[in-house]
Length: 437
Image (cartoon, rainbow, N blue to C red):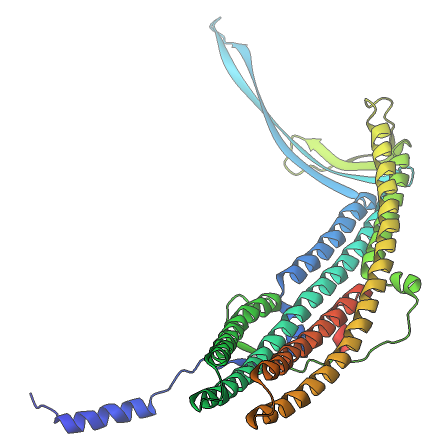
């Protein structure tokens, strides 16, 4: 066997690795509208709500089948065996088996003629149940949008927090180096050096904490996207609130258009038809029926038999079932009416609270922006004065700490304003289609 020289083998190995495909787990960039589109297609809660609508539609068709003619086919074959005694010429007797086969074919039709309009009320109730399921779908979509928006904003904040904490770490390191230089020159005491060193360690911890938090926020966003597997993602966007309504809206009229209240109204209307249907149970049920067929000893009969008629069913005593059903239907209606009133009051309060929180949040962003600008200017001046020996460390570090805290406060204010905006959209009933309108 010929051996490949070591140098040539090394060259071949390097070439193979150089041209081999390299798998890189790149982070995926996602904008807000891309997240919305994906959640609409994949989120399991939305799929579940969609299937509830399909169930309501199927229930209506089941109810409708009661007023459609019912046809029933019947076919049977019956063989009878009888034994008879036959006398022979030799005065002896013998048993003989007789077999008779009868064929029976028939088709029976029946149609409901009158039932006190119960089926009509049941169909109306089923229609309102479909409306309720559709509004439930909108409520689910609205809740998903809120959670999705919250997760997206939290990831944006986590990404920005890494940048902010890295800036703070760099600033703390610059402070530490300056204090250390003055300490080595005999112009600063050890307590100031230890304090600046501790501030640097805390800033480094803040960076590590912010970086670890990104993974948690990515996980939360992946869940709200409806994805089954995890992959690193980066949220792409800014932390600014979009269009803002400064004039106080008419919360009472706005509440009427929310999916939650519409769902409660549909449930109340369905319960109302349920009461009417329960009353209809006290009326008789009238059916028209007809049968065509044949009973004959021939497999293929040559004549037909038919009959037509009508029937009426009127329960006289059912152990109080109809009265109990009526009481139950009335109680369901009373509950639905109370739920509607409570829901309306709750929606109005929620609209008021979320709108006020949004106004406060946006105003606070502007306040924190001005405070950050002022704190940054003060920190710049104080650093120069400390370096020139015109300010003590204790006075300087107070201004420096204020600047660092103000940077964090500004980021938190932006995040809170975006969260308040998401809550306001959800309170209005904004669904995943809200951002496409």
